[in-house]
Length: 311
Ligand code: C5P
Image (cartoon, rainbow, N blue to C red; front, side, top):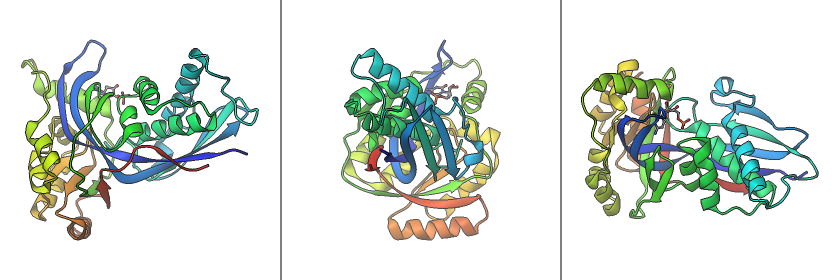
């Protein structure tokens, strides 16, 4: 039987600038996505009908029915291929796809784990069905599945606009950055964190989001000190208002010498930029001993986007 396995990275946002709410319920963003080396693995195989099985970190919280984002991605890709009248989407004579997800990216943690699995499903099915869609085609389908899915296809470091799905790869130095991720004991639903931001802002006019020139300059220079200073996230205050313990986690990382400390996306994961690989290990050990989070992981970035590792 033909099977395809794809590895897909978590994302962090080096900048997340959020505009006013739109009429469709989303917010216009300017964000700098950065893929890091914390990976889920997604395997697809031909099946009588579409199905999904999930194991690993937080598997119990992932829907295992048609609502699963990876299955939605399978359906979106099938529809896109059919509408392009390219070819029938079957493998080994079977009309469905059995998706198996092995999770290391925690669920509802601000690391776009669900979006990553959807991106992996797109890349895997494109291969399983030998559909031959380009990365750009896959990113277009990805944008209809969720705001962060296209970036997980692309990987690296990229500027996102619109809902986050309109991507431009960022011009960066080949520097590698060493991050420590502090996972919280709990979850934050993304829509609630955006709503909390709207409430915190009240009736004040909200300017259109703008890309940070200082952040882009730090990335071009490959300078971790400047990068650490330039990290920003408009969702941080609302994430902290819903999960006050994050304040202590961020302060602990800063006191331990992190070059930058930030809530990741809509939280509650906190991220810390280390001076290098050794400092990342020291920081991870010290943070885990400080009792300010559930667990910690080291991750390096930028990492590649969703890629086939076995077929
Ligand atoms: O697109 P996705 O399903 O990942 O978005 C999840 C939720 O996050 C949306 O329903 C919306 O409440 C919020 N969101 C937003 N503006 C964005 C992206 C997400 O308000 N640009």
